[in-house]
Image (cartoon, rainbow, N blue to C red; front, side, top):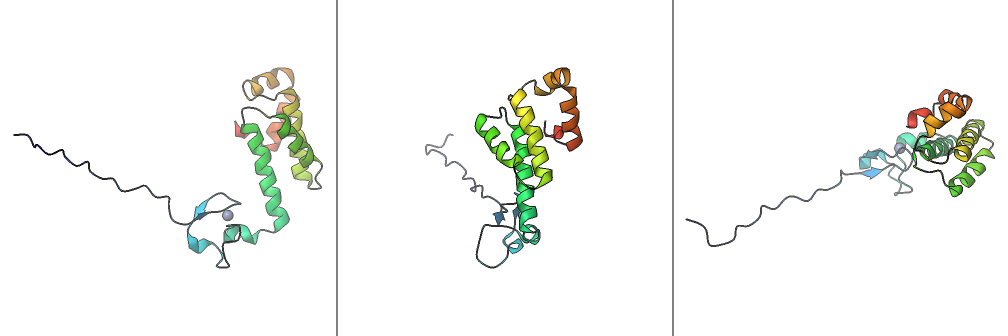
Length: 137
Ligand SMILES: [Zn+2]
């Protein structure tokens, strides 16, 4: 015999994000204890806070350059940002930025970028490999 009353759907517990905060520098979600107790200024974990400010900014800029190569297209606005990064005093960031800017000017789109570059400009591809930026594909 069938029930006349409609059955109640089993309620599922809401999916909550893991406790804690995401660090602005390393992007890793860490528990509350990993952050300094002094307010919630910027959410920078204690491991990242130990790194000096110029070094931290340099790491963020290198991550930014790496991200440009993962995008489907390096837009003119991105190229303008790369130009400002090439003008920096930090030589490691500036050299990477100039290399990626060179790539962006001749191969702005990600599709077939590596294939075309290996055919037309293998020297540029070799430079990218040496810097370690090809891994981003
Ligand atoms: Zn961190």
